[in-house]
Amino acid sequence: MPVLKKMMLGTALAASLAGGLMPSAAQADDKKLESIGISVGLLGNPFFVATIKGIEDHARAINPDVDITSVSADYDLNKQVSQIDSFIAKGVDIIMLNAVDDEAIAPAVMRAKNAGIVIAAFDVSAPGADVTVMTDNIAAGRKACEYIVEQLDGKGNVAIIKGPSSSSLNDRFKGCSDVFAAAGGITVLSDGQNGQGSRDGGLQAMQGLLTRFDDLDAVFGANDPMALGAQLAAKQLGRTNLIITGVDGAPDTEASLAEADSLLKASASQDPYTMAGRALDMGYAFFQGERPEQPTVLIEPMLITADNLDEYKGWTAKR
Image 1 (cartoon, helix red, strand yellow):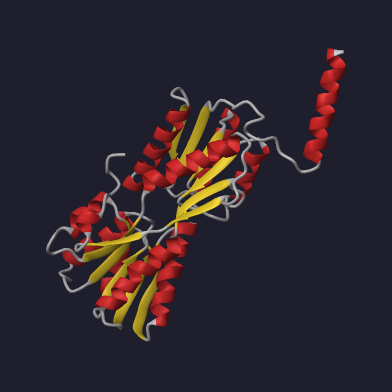
Image 2: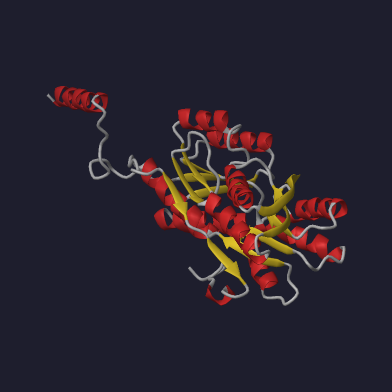
């Protein structure tokens, strides 16, 4: 009789799944979260340090003993693919992914999903990810470049320093480009410089721009490290009449905005701790069998300048 009952229950469950029904979280026992793999673009960027802290805090609130492995892809696609394959071999429950290439990462994501691993993307989209939490990066690029247009009274020569091909940087580029295109008096002298997402990359890209153009009025860096690198290059070359903006709201940006001689005038801020922590929470819910109505969540950025810096909580605010 117990065997027959078990067979009947199994048949009923199979029928319900065939009909497209999923068991609710209340019906199923919670699965224990045992291991997480995190791959980020560049651990040398304080932004990613804050995302990892957010993931760790939220994960350990679920299971204090959860095993967490954090690795840096260094904006190298092949390296990140290898990291994902290592997480698959390890059998992690959730991969927290900051994709360095929002298209080419797709096969690795699919391998992980086929292995039954939940993929939670943060900051950058990844094709096939189960859940995604990002800043509204189009809005971030738009706000940073609207500031430039306003400061130039709608007339001037500008440049964009872009970064590696990730959805977040590409979206910021689009938001900024749309603003400049809509401003009739703005001339984009260059928008193809790749600052590699880093301060050194921004420095080198800006050195090239200032060598080529002596009439440059403003520069948008698609993230704060590149914008800060651009500022350093401008100061080294004695160019003090430039407007530079970025995206992130990083601690170094806060310090720069507070300086009287700062060329970095504005940054569309992100909250990496909250963003990544929320992605982990959504990934854990998916791991438990819950399917969100909206698998992608966008967080609205705030434009910070010297004028409203006191209102900005920043990445290192007490949580």
